[in-house]
Image (cartoon, rainbow, N blue to C red):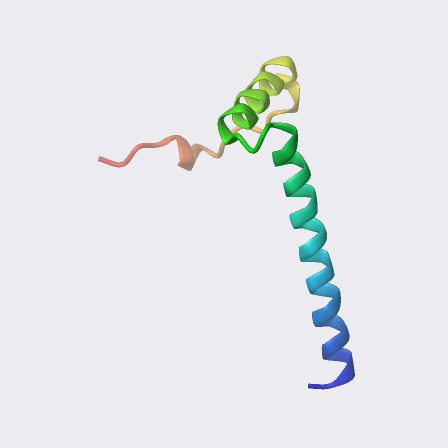
Length: 64
């Protein structure tokens, strides 16, 4: 591997570690209970409907 590729892999690993750290902190806030997290997110949706992005039409159609 070249030194440039090694550097980009290290940077990628650091970014992934940072993402996992944030995910862990969020999970910790809700007692590592995904149901509590989802309930919180649903409350935020009710409080701020203007921030929701509607689903594309194709996602709303049910295939028979």
